[in-house]
Image 1 (cartoon, rainbow, N blue to C red):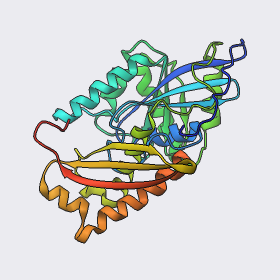
Image 2 (cartoon, rainbow, N blue to C red):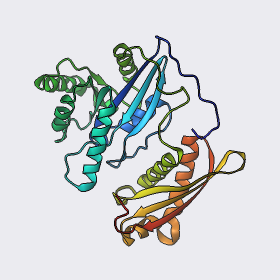
Image 3 (tube, rainbow, N blue to C red):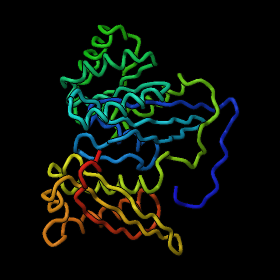
Image 4 (cartoon, rainbow, N blue to C red):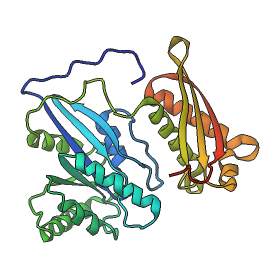
Amino acid sequence: MTKDTPPAPIPTDSTTQCGYIGLVGLPNAGKSTLVNLLVGEKVSIVSAKPQTTRSVVLGIAHHGGMELVLVDLPGFTVSRKAEVKKLRSAWAEGIEQADELLVLVDASQPHQQSLPILVTMVGQQRRPITVALNKIDLVPKPQLLPLLAEWQARLAELGMADQPIFLISAKTGSGVPELLAHWQRRLPPSPWMFGGEVVTDQEAPTRAAELTREAMMHLLKDELPYNVQVVTEVFKPLRRGRYRIEQVIRVAIPRHQAMVVGHQGDMVRRIGLRARLGIQAAMEMDCDLFLRVLVAKKGTQG
C-alpha cells in the first residue's frame, strides 16, 4: 500500500485461519484473475498473452476469519528455452512455500498436452491438492459433467481419487464461494501472517512496473517481445499524496525499441497513458509517469 495508514491489527485468536495456497497451471489458465478476485483488487497482472506472470506473486486475501496467502506461480511449461527454465525454477520455489496446491485448468481447453505432466508433478509434491476447472462460463453446460467425470477418472489413475474438483469461473465468480468454503473446512486454526490492510508482498515500485508491462501486453499483443523488462528507477512522493514514477522499458534489439516507441512516439505515449491510469486505479494513488525505452546492453537482461 502506498498510503500512510497504520496496519490493521492481526487477529490471533483461535477463530482465525491462515494458509499458503500455491496456484499452479498452464499459461492462461486464469490464475492471476482468480488471485485478483479473491484479494478484491488487482495484485497480479492479467493478459491474454501466455506467461503474463513472470515471477512468484503473493496476494493476501481475507474472507471472514480466514487469511489466504496466494502464491501466483508462472504458467507451467515443458519448453527447454532458457527463459522458461527460470520460470520453472520460480515455480518450484513457489510450491516450496505452499501449504496446499490449487491446480487450475482451463475448462475450455482441458486436453492440452502438458496437463498430464503438470498433474503428475503436482501429485509428487506431498501436499494437499485441489483441482479447479476454470472458465466454465466458456463451456456449454451439457459438457461440464462429462468433463468433471473425465478429471475424476484422471486423478484416480494417478492415485489421487480423493482430491476434490471444483467448477469455477474466476471471471464471473461462479463456484468460487464453494472453493472458499472448502478451504475454510480444511485449513487449521492459525493466527494471520499479515494485517488486514495488506494485499500483496510486492514493493510499490515493482507493482508499478508490472502494471506498465500489463499495459504493453494489451496494446502490443502478440508483437510484444517476450523478454521485455520494465524497471522502476524513480518512485518519489510529491506533495498532496502524488508520486513521480520514472521507468525504463528494456528491449533486446533496436527493432523492438522502434516497435515499443512507435511512429513519432505514438505507441509509448499510449502505453504511458494506459499504465498511469492502471497504476492510479490499482494502487489508489495519483502519479506522473515517465517512460524511456532502451536497448539493453549485452548481459543485462535475464
